[in-house]
Length: 103
Image (cartoon, rainbow, N blue to C red):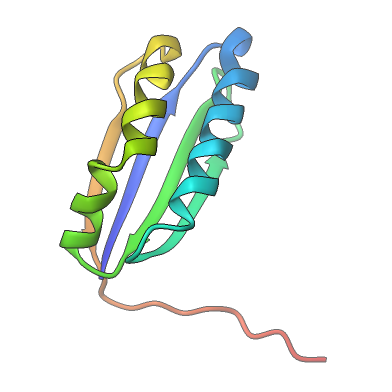
């Protein structure tokens, strides 16, 4: 498995547009083969910084994501309103845990 974080910075005036684009992207990525998780997070700071947390079955699945039509359509729109370069980091999994909720 492969995990990715991608950070994007926008100004306050562009935050609503950025959120809409990131949600649109998340909806499309949910249907990609090999995508296990795609979360859009907003850091609690100003200026608005959004972090994508992505998990793929393999490096091949991530490569397919990078060449997807929806990423090619949406990313240039995000780039137009970003106020800093994106920061993308790839991770290998060491361990993973999910909280169990039982009543």
